Image (cartoon, rainbow, N blue to C red; front, side, top):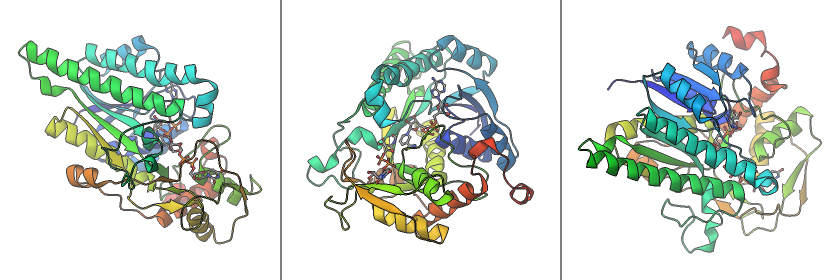
Length: 366
Ligand code: NAD
Ligand code: WQD
């Protein structure tokens, strides 16, 4: 199989940068577009540092369709897209929903339109476990399989569910149109990847999550407590129906998640399945207290926390059933929670200012 170039939107961000790295390591050429709203161009240097290969980078806003056209024209060997670029803060999405729809939904329409004009017909889309909403409202849906009815409970989640529908409609329409013209319709394919909770960093200590502004996810917040930027972690509720009263999530190592994109892309190129959704998770649920313990072990000391009330919109349990990805994609999360915590701590200790500061020389020399 020939490997072409892959366009990675949002490739300077957390998951996009690790996926770009995995693609380069697998022999793909990578073109990144990102407007650096929640990331830094330094990511490109770190990807090159680890892989020895430099992705092409364009500062592009995904809401500008004509800018996509320029990139596709400049790189006619692009045959697939992995689409990460989005706004992703659940709370903020309730405050400025139109901005979320404009970036996440309109930006995706711009991308699909430009792809269509340039005959680029494979897309891997960053969906989210958040599309399921509260799966405990059904019997026997934990761990959550892909056939669990979706029901997002916030505007961010609704942008993801809307994009899943738009991509599905467009791919089906394109396949039908191509068939009517007597052409091979199976060229249009989409993977809807529903990720659970990404965690961790690169084991080298030179690549990790570098959110601009205040983080809102559990592990980046715990890392800030450990490095002294935050006094304590606030635990949102200990009155859930779990073993210790705190909520359950499925934390997946970022390297495993990145690999999931690579295998999904290869599957689209080899099997032409049309549109398919896959959960990317470990299948193992961990509570907030499990995570505090695991991260404290990685740091080597206990970390201060205080239990406060539940966070609005949180659900008891979001644990994946990853069987479909295990069987169809031959993919399985291999790294443990402890790997994720150790890697996150190595990244945090060595890069307290994220990508705004060079990592220590000894890491660069390795
Ligand atoms: P991130 O914020 O680190 O990466 C997103 C990237 O998109 C950033 O580099 C940002 O600068 C870029 N971007 C935002 N608006 C843009 C625009 N208008 N034009 C061009 N680029 C733009 O986020 P992430 O955690 O890497 O998430 C990547 C994708 O995965 C997102 O679609 C997110 O919704 C989805 N997702 C994330 C998680 C998670 O917990 N991190 C879970 C499930 C799904
Ligand atoms: C994890 C657990 C909190 C912070 C979010 C999005 C989801 C997906 C992943 C994009 C929960 C608890 C957290 C804190 C806490 N993103 N917590 N104190 O909410 O599972 O998922 O990110 O698609 O869509 O909703 O992740 O890391 O915010 O929370 O106790 O200060 O940690 O209540 O149980 P969440 P999270």
